[in-house]
Image 1: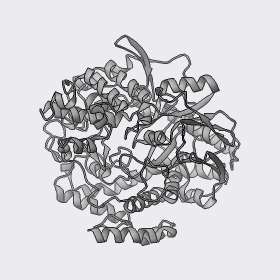
Image 2: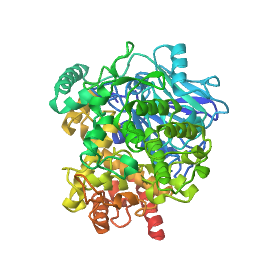
Image 3: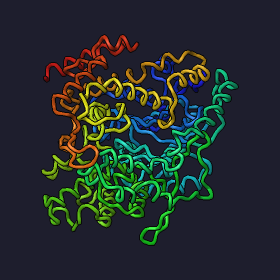
Length: 616
């Protein structure tokens, strides 16, 4: 098919073998790329219930179908079974890796097995080699990048830090120093395979396009339009760093382990746009991604404890390593982001679990003897730095926290009511009590608590009306997110479905109609796979106790995540029904597989339904 390499690489680290395979056209048409490819291959290659850190799990790098071809299309999907949740998990990184992997002749790189020694993969044009990484093992992510760039020059690199090697359940994969596939512990999957890095060398594209001339005209037109778009002005100016102003003033901030969704402007401003712009710089050797018309990621140069460093702060990292833990000092928070990157951990999960521990300390529920050191609780920057290092090394109390917030609460036997997660995945920096029906997005998301699984609209408060009224808009948003993730497009760009259909026809030479049900198709397969692997709907589709507490001040004062429990149940039932799933059990109906043009999975849906019916 045009617009694709029609080729994937399979690497078996146990056998030390690499083979290239043709990618079937029916897979391309039904699953498109990126997220779609990742979910398809996990579903078909990895038996449900496979342990995430076993050699039988796969780790898939899949560029979006448009990766490197249209403005703002740099994303690569990383998909695997998560060591945090046991569910299929997808996470994304931008910049060069996705486009360069596609240029190297691959529509996906699939890694399974476990090497006997540390290795890295070297991807050249139509070739993948297994190389010795013994000298890199134990090094921080930043040192690993520098060593590999010194050896290979122009290359895009995905690497893990010590946390991935130590199998920290929320270890991440860092790309070219400042982008991360952060969620779900996929760095631990890499570590379990003794895979330190993937190096993709620069090469020239060789894909055939249906109408390259028309594509160039469209690229220029959309690039210029988005470069000047008024509704993207704040992103161009601040990136996502002004997010705390938005979240705090809508009652959605994660302050003090989600105890204070509203905080005063003076406090929020300490970790928001204008304050952060004071540190903004552009290193001499830094080149903005040429395909992005917004260029929202910004470097800052910060000095903390005598150390000077560059980092690209984003709202989620700032909020979870700062606001959630009560540290409102930007140089300290920037240092935490830089440190977390180098250690190779998800900043969302790391901040969440430390905030939880700080709350236990604040409430007097955990003594210094039990922790192994004195902690001041919220606002203790020194303590936070120590905990980050201890988690990455699995030392002392860090070994407990490295298991994630749900398991940590179970190990310590306290604090479960303060642990903010869904399906073992720590919540990101948006408290749903400030937006009607948004908690349902967390509750029903295939990977657990994710802010990238649909936002209901219009924005209103939970007490403003029944949550079920906004379920159709949530589904619409979720399906658009899945489409963007499969195409490799940044979600900040306001492409319409019609825009993407036109790009698809120009690139591929076929109708973009196949894109219409893509998100629904992917989520339905994920639900079947997860149920067969041990997920228990509908009781797993719930929210943590904290979000049933009513906000005490601010614009969402008096609001919990839903009006009451019946409001939640009715909204969840509506979601199931509109998804073509059993409205009581939350499992896809066999006839829905026919609608989605994947009848080959009908028997799996029937089996999943029977499993849940028996249990219920």
